[in-house]
Length: 324
Image: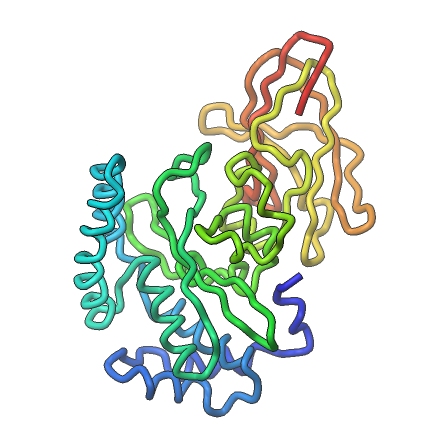
């Protein structure tokens, strides 16, 4: 499976330090920038790493552009041709702002990654598709709303998302630059929890092509930061009965101590933990169980440390039968 662990023998600190050395470089001469970021690095993956971390740490997300596209997507939701025509014109403004102010949205991040990679003689493509977040309609695919990249390293394709690696918008819609390494050379199975390409070949795993994208548990940037893959249940919306046992499991890509794992719900603004049991690491899967006592609809959040990494809803009924 194409993921960062393919390069576990490489120390990316050297490439990251090269990117830091060139912090603040402008975009007026992309060939020079690509040269400065890569000429002294021995492997393509290190060269790409320097390009990637430089872009993530030197380009800011632009909430104004983001909101404008969201508004237009809603306005033209029944006329995709009109939206594409508007979007093609808007890109001119967006790229102008990218090069002058180093502010952009996903299209600009993906474009810059591709261009700098091309100048470093690394094959890289822009992938357009659906990004699944709490602010999009999580239960159905609407118009495409996101772009990311596929990069070819050692004759193998890998997936990255510089937009989501670069940071996030806070509650006041201000961009906070906070690098998240979880979107760099991500396992395609984890990547597909929140990314679905228009062209299914960019899933990079044929087994994913027939799986329903929007039915899986909701994941977050923290899911990628902690590098965990929710495994079971494999759907976000569950049905169960009172006192029926449900097993939850996830695959950690790095070591996670069991005492860091919890599950909770919100009561107003307060967290209420569930008393999970049979918590164990079994053959690389962390598992635990829980029985819901009351007939109601639960919002259930899996946590690692203080971070929510997966969300389910559990509709608990009185009946004897359960399906999930």
